[in-house]
Image (cartoon, rainbow, N blue to C red; front, side):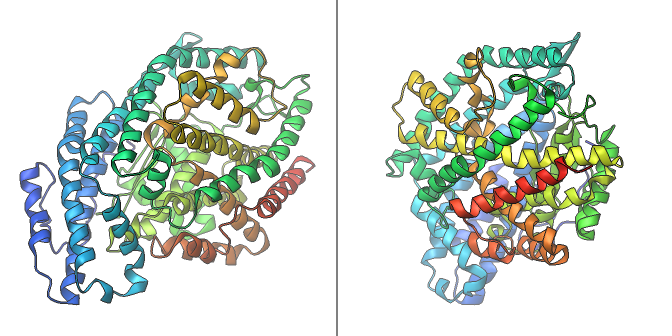
Length: 577
């Protein structure tokens, strides 16, 4: 961590004593019992009960969050691992059981209909859904699934390859695919995928077990399949499976052709007869990879200044996190892969975790996670946990929009005009190229979970068929099919958080729409974006998008308009003298 993490001034407590720490169930249980047994004789009684429950939720949530943070920053910390396992195996199941009883108490309370609709509507919608979805048999099963899924990050965190006599994580090695020498990139590409291939059997075994447990969970709740179960469990009230199908179709018809055009430009600019997968990240117009920062301190400083340029509140949030030791950004061994922003609902200031290796993607990652952090900070004043825990379709809108709005000020990272131009081109290419991959992963998961009895061979064939339908036809994968067959193993979401992925695509489209408005009227676009973030989850998804000045729309016409806008912006940068 950049500093030793310190405890912030917590929000004022009225129910759980300030000195209380989440340790054992025997110490925690009395607070749940108090809420369960408390008599509610009036609407004010009910509202106070809700405030007290939300306070307890915040105390527990923050304690669990810190335990997760500590096992990710150092996977070799046995004490941290033991504390995390205790929370997951011992505390979480007991809390889940009480949560259900408390939810039932709320929905059965005679004063619940008197709660102000504009303040409690979303909360009650989520609680009623939780009551409907609850199954006692699924409590231990959910614990088993959570623990089992963590084997994925353990496998990946231990994967390294040797490059020029140095061992490095696969994440760090991936940055070498930006290097100018083609033969070198090809060598690194093969090493990465050969190392992944060595773990294909353990990962297939792991997924088969997760698939069986998830299907059993769906059956316990009287669902035909895990897909339909998970849609309800995720609280997807504001869109349907058909909307997801529209997303898949629109990306295939409107975005994939644009990606093909971009890849043709890349191939021709590089002067290659064939574009190979190790050619996708190298700079086509320069032999020097973009290096926006030299160390983590410089990354934080430049990112803060960049955020300031959009809105003063944005940069100050990141600086507060730095000062409190709420940033762990550098890549190192025994640190788990990936990146995240962890909300801390008790203190209100989140924690950012990532694995920086001095690349453009690292800069993008911190800007993305800063969007989450700002969002979390702007909603920290809400009392209800549900008002602060925004759905992913909104959370990712905050993060992806931040990437695009800050792009206007990337001269802070790239004072050289040519490097700035190259960075912006790379960003806009990424914005569009990620959409087909998101559609691929989501459609694949629809197939997996609606056909739970499939064989591994059927799964492989389905993956190859779906991936081919979204993959750019310009990229030559000949001779690499054995790598492609298990490419989905790289996607953590499939193993750890099933169906949490299409939200990135939905939000990416929303971010493009906000950026389009920003190009037309910057002040208005930032104001609407800010107001949308402040809503937290006090309105439904479609209302939040409208507050941001955009629509939650996956029609071919709408996506074609957004794709055309990005392509025109790209063309302007490409032909900029």
